[in-house]
Amino acid sequence: MVYNFVVNNKKIFIVSILLSILAIKLDPYSWIGIILLIFLIAFQIYSTKNFILFFILSLLVVSSDISETLRIVLNTSALIFLMYVFFKDYGLQINSYPKLPSIIKGYVSFTIVIMVFSSLFSDNILTGFDETLRQILFFVMWYILFAYLSEEKDSYNYVLVLISAGAIVAIIIIYSFIVSDISIYLLQTQGIIHEGGSFKNVTAAAGIFAVTIPLTFILLLLNLKMNKILTYSLYAILLIQVIGLFLTNSRSGLMAVFISISIILFILNRKTFKRFILFASLSFILFYFILPSISELFAIYFRTDRVFENTRYYLWNMSIGIIIDNPIWGTGPGQFKNFMYHHIPVMLGSWDESQIAWIFKNAGLGESHNFFLFRTAELGFLGLLGAILLPAIFIHLSFKVMKRNFYNRRNYYLLVGIFSLGIGMLIRSFFESTGLLSHGWITRDLPFWICFAIIIHFYVIRTEKIQKK
Image (cartoon, rainbow, N blue to C red; front, side):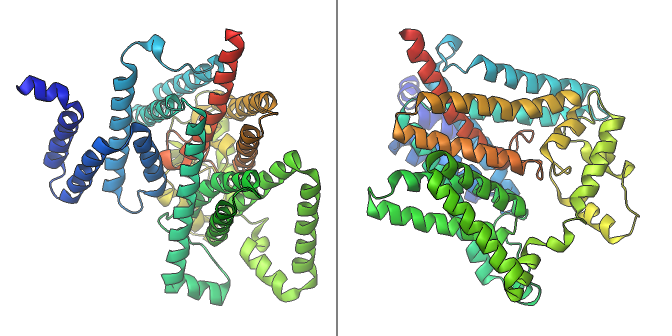
């Protein structure tokens, strides 16, 4: 009888064991057990793909700044759930697993190998292996998400959940700004805005917007004049996200979005692109050069007085010094911080040093503030090669799938949107280390890699069709 119960109620049995283990380990956090119990009940009602979308949304919205414990539980639960459903659906027959293009398998393998060797030759092998393990688990999670892109509508569901995450993050930022006396005071007295909502680091939220705003914009163009209710809804969502982005005051995020939107318009509608650039140029000239009061606000918001006195320049200088000292294998994954003060270019105790010290204490990763310097400093010149190959492969596959789907308006628009946001993220990577490949940092990298998975999905299904012919 017990055997029959286990066989007929596998989901309940497995999740019950997980709940029991978590209840023992997390006794002070009984609320987590309640959440998991609700999850267990819902798991019996809703489909697997709906739960995958739920986890994607949760992983992007629930940051460790809200609760470190909740984030750990969420990451663990998501990974266990995804692996469980994957092996349940695909079994252990590797030949039956969804195929990745050879170029992607090669790149993932290359990334892991250089991280392993860099860790072995580093001063702290355990830290290096910890970062490598996190990167491996990220790739595992990402591959499972890719595996469930089995139908065309799945790609659009992934896009919609990314947009939903962007909208939720934006609403939290707007709400936090409204209820924060300090934020409003700083805005009124100094013209400074740095609101991240549930993210202490505003660039994390801006990185999400750099992906979700172009996606919202492309869906708006795709739906324009077709469904009025949906069009108005997309306008509202787009506006909310743009406001959220401006409240973060992330210049790299704003630049990424501007570039992405420009590329979308350039590819899909040259006339509108010219009008957009003309409008942006005239607005800049009007506000910055003609209206003194507006130009002052513009200068304060974009911190134009600090363009040539930016802490990033010192961090880039330090990164180059570290690369010169560690050219082959780098410092080791996650170990840049240990070498920062060996190459500090400013006087200890100065204001500039205090800014570097803040980054030293608070930055979780990517202190270089440049993706290419970050990868080179931590992984050596092979890390730089990997940093160059990633956008190169993305652009290569994007061009192929856009060309193949040129006559399918719906898919073509989606692929153009993803390609454009990828270029925006690439430009952003010259000023931010995270967002493309950050040793498996889920919140930072998952939005881009989900979009990359969609590109790969369209590439794979088209290749399979050609091979069958």
